[in-house]
Image 1 (cartoon, rainbow, N blue to C red):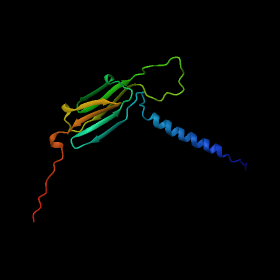
Image 2: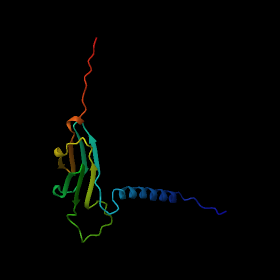
Image 3: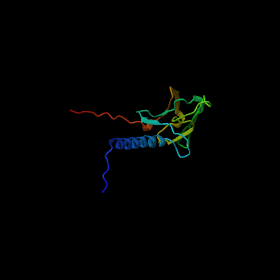
Length: 145
């Protein structure tokens, strides 16, 4: 049986490689197989509406398109490289550029003709108001003595 000398730095290097792989895999997961990137979104509900907020930093407002068709909300657009540096070499490029598209099926309780969208500080906010009958109705309880 061969005796091997224990090298603590080899174990640290192995751990570092595993951590690097985890981070690289998580970054790759935001990219679709075709290379199109997908912006992160938050969707939450209030009493009167459903709100979608999408992170679109660096995207011009004119390059964003929001549509509702057949009860599907589609947000698409493009982030362009404005100052492509041809004289410099890139060692790493992690920001996504190019086209993107996200689609969401809307619940039946949304007033599709009253949907509003605004874009401020790199965040697209889409407000989808609920229909009147979909709002929760408060029933008052009468106390009898």
